[in-house]
Image 1 (tube, rainbow, N blue to C red):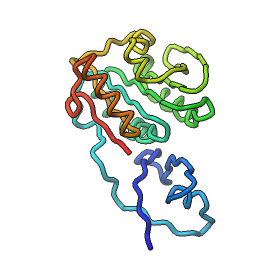
Image 2 (image 1 turned 30 degrees about the vertical axis):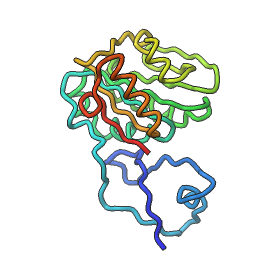
Image 3 (image 1 turned 90 degrees about the vertical axis):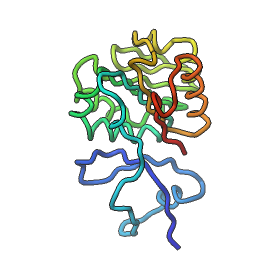
Length: 205
């Protein structure tokens, strides 16, 4: 029997090795992957699938990338694979990394590497920790406590980075569980008149 599951790739399209960000669940394919031995065989498709792309987002705008847990993986891949296109298309990139605990911020070094790929003030990273109180503020790298819904609703994120969200220059890519995505999409629609499929692009699991 062959088990098949979709996973997001962290590595760029230029990397020789594929890197996946996988949470070790107690059952299912993810757990089996964590118990592989050297020389065990796994199969992967020759092509990547999906429409979670930056191609359809209009030029000269601000792009928010919101990823919960392992769902930050596609954004790390996009940001390292498409540097020239991103610089051509966007005025600013805001990466929002949602985790439960500080110890879940597993890609801090990768994010700093990505930050150095782009000009100053172009790339901002906001790490939001929901179950611990922690505050770290830099001009383009933040670790704050709270929940994404409340921080968008009360305007905290806009004030934090001095960016006003509107339906003329802001676009969102959101990756994570469906409940979180639906809640954020509803908030963005009600507060900012941002439309899913027009201003907001999602990838759920």
